[in-house]
Image (cartoon, rainbow, N blue to C red; front, side, top):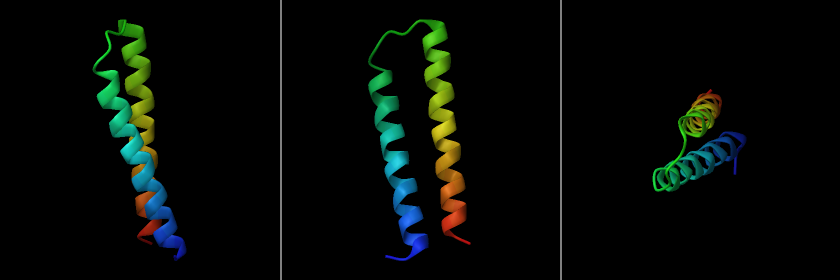
Length: 58
């Protein structure tokens, strides 16, 4: 596997985990502060995946 393929694979794995985490999170009743923190982490993971994908495409 090339470096770009490795990076793309990592991004895909993280994005899959983020989506799964988000799906599980919606099943639970969270306080407002917990929901904000959860959403912030999800957003951070989304941005990291986007950056990894951009890096893989260089």
